[in-house]
Image 1 (cartoon, rainbow, N blue to C red):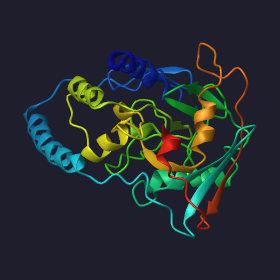
Image 2: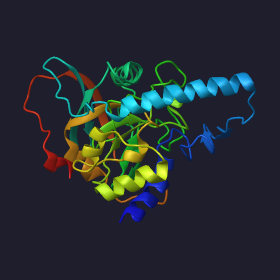
Image 3: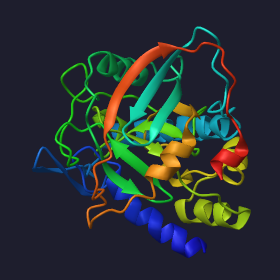
Length: 282
């Protein structure tokens, strides 16, 4: 089962891109129809090597801290807090909590685009069952979109947010510095402890223990952590997202019948009853 999931993970990772074909740093990606190399040079002098050693120390310290970081995806929104309501034609409404304190640029970009009506009438151009649904491209083919700044931006990664089922994140073309307007909502799958240990062994990293608990109960896409900007979380309407992921698609994972985002509105949470039911996430 794990090998099947891992192979799916490898295949699916290529779709989380804004006009891209892969998400690694040592591969070529396509953006705006052009091929761009993301491979970095291997040449370094002594000073560079010393800097790299210091960076490694910082990374080790940061990794140790992030391993125990609190995961706040399922923190309840407070009354009066800014939220996003996405209405999807023929499916229903999805409500998202945002994390401006953790991902300020990511939230600012999405909120401002929504206020401008940028996402209205766009489609989810890539849908993969047990993985994610992706949209936000005005071209509708994965090669378009821009930020409110007219160029790509770096949304960064917060150690307090993971790719749990229902997570809202930006697609990119190799790093978080290439975020634009395209986003995805995670559906994912529930992982066993053996699966998670195998993922750690294959990646050579140790997973955040709090994220591990989420992936083994709620589910998600753990292999995406650290490579994409998570900036929101579904708190109502995950059943809508799960229903969309079942739609029939072509060879490019594009739905045969268009899944249309009627509108994306910025609103205030009115204190209504929350729907953080684990049953909705399985």
